[in-house]
Length: 371
Image (cartoon, rainbow, N blue to C red):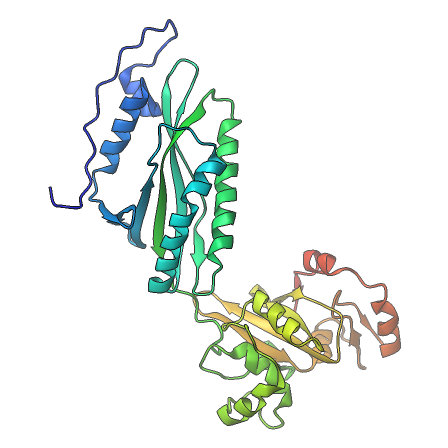
């Protein structure tokens, strides 16, 4: 056995049970994950785990995974498993170690997916034991992810999972937490921000300006394109660089997500942004609709599977939407929240004071098609 590899003791035979209660046969126990004693259950789990080679690394057991998209697995053993802890106490006792591991992975990998799982031993009133595990979903970690917040959310999920197990009426209750597993998986962030063309029926309306950029700053270019007098859709590095000072971009990350737009709006209090998403079959959904301020911009975001997302400036809102809603001649004035349209601007302004809430818009207007 090479140094650093971890091996556990071989499984002990089942102990005799003298209770008058009906006890499953050994084959039934193995099928249902039931065991006669805690010692036997733990040894069986150890043997199963030790089919792989584990090495010590900064207080964890680490092993490379054979799964296609898995990078490596970490196990943090419960050093004081004989002392029972409530789950909140247990998670609090290991949080600092997990946080250090996450910081190290964040520094080395930049972007990855992670899943957490607790292996625990449960027992019932007649000392029959059972092994359970409960886990989180896959969580995405990027270079700017708040790891403390992520762990708190993951811990809450694990607490809920344990609570659900405890109320299912099986008669089993947790007797000890065996270990805490961390599964690290590959993740390649989509190339959000890079240009891809508008659908033909949208482009033909000449209502949207989509800058042909080759980097991740399409949100910035969409916001600045309204200041470009000639051919704003053509990426002009010098022109956009000169315009950069129009806004405060402090703490705005690129490619920009919704939280970065909120940061931008905090930095630039005189600005407002309505964000609309172009989905399948040219269907549009209001993502963020707000009261307009002095400097207002309407943005359209396109998303493609495996291609990321791209922001564009909606230069002519009424031209983009109203032609799909009415065949009548004449200019239409459209409400950007509920998509109702009016013959005059006066009627539109009267309507705005009693317009629907943003929540209603998002729930009920997701199927509006641009035809």
